Image (cartoon, rainbow, N blue to C red):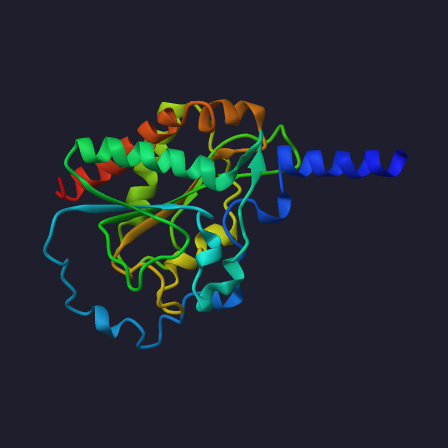
Length: 246
């Protein structure tokens, strides 16, 4: 009886609390590093102008439909993210994305919700990849966000600052300073490596909305996703206003 009980316990902990191997942003690859600034990789951006059209915000649901990742990003397949409280990370991310989209649309903003796969050379005025963090230490709590390691727009840090300010204000969560290289080297930012990535002139960030492994954070991001959505929305709106895009 002892061995079956141990196996059942391991399954319960893994499925109910956290799968530590798939938490947060998908795994980092060395090739996701940006190219050397001395190369001519950026020549095509000379004289770039924003395409005509309404202001658009893209909200990516981290780990959603990961099995549909293209061949060039096949390492993402099967990566379902963290889990906790009986929820998979992608479910939590989707509800926050949907709530944020609804609030932005009320302000007349065009919004697109994206899965794991990014359309080739995708452009939006703002791109936010939404995730939830995880840890075997259930006392770990807080949100964190990051801009791309190489930001060609020059605006990602401004977007990051405003989203952090408004998200913290709305949720009451403290900022976790432990930003990982997985976040700053997030695959969706890697336009130099992938066809399925955001255009280099898309102002982008990645947001870890809280720890799905934390009972405290789950009360917010699982039970009250509308609060997380409000904080993210306010940050995005303030950024768009600062760029005269609304």
